[in-house]
Length: 295
Image 1 (tube, rainbow, N blue to C red):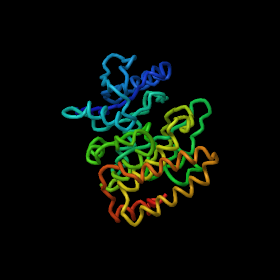
Image 2 (cartoon, rainbow, N blue to C red; image 1 turned 60 degrees about the vertical axis):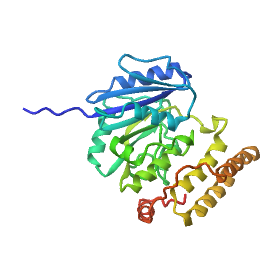
Image 3 (cartoon, rainbow, N blue to C red; image 1 turned 90 degrees about the horizontal axis):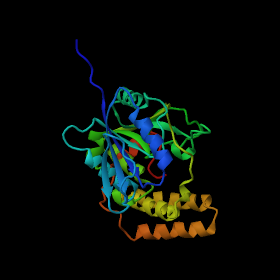
Image 4 (spheres, one colour; image 1 turned 45 degrees about the vertical axis):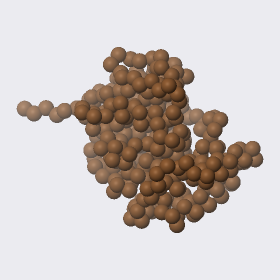
């Protein structure tokens, strides 16, 4: 009688040794997963990891290279012969609430072979609330509605490794913010899609991204970089004008808006890296999926 092999998943976790209790809980929930074969790497982003469970690989980076580049390093560390069919990026303060969570994500990927990535629903462990920014679509009012998606919540996402590698990984120089849009658009430009599976829940504390000192500068700079890297030339000014207007409306603090415009100017000066705009076919596919790449 033939026996089915367990799906293989490479897992990348970043640490800066600043969440000792949450990190231990996150790793315990990860290593408790059943019906999957895991290879796990902890990337110390500017630190030597101070907590490494038995059997887990580590990479120590001498400086903090930012989240997307740290993820790239972790994925590369597990690449090559024997690498997993899937790769799972896992924030070090998230929790997999049941031992079958990853197996369910893989099963969802099997049901949607057109999808390069599967996005679970992220919910605060105390309130059960899914924040709007965690719902990877424009109409985010109902966080429990599944469907095709064009962006991702980067901190907890399952990708097919073959698609991840073909797309070229995360934009490492973004440091933080909007790297998931860049990667999602490149995956869509390969003819792939994404799928949101809200019935699979992963816990993550509901924190404010603006707690990062560089938040307003980086979100503005990276929006510009994203546009110059991935959009056809006629769409660049439309995209940037849309986000400038939305930011002026949403950012109530004059001081924060000043920082945002400084980031916008920084992005316009260059540094976006290789320009590889999506095709107009991809623009049409994204539009039909509910999110034209101008917002």
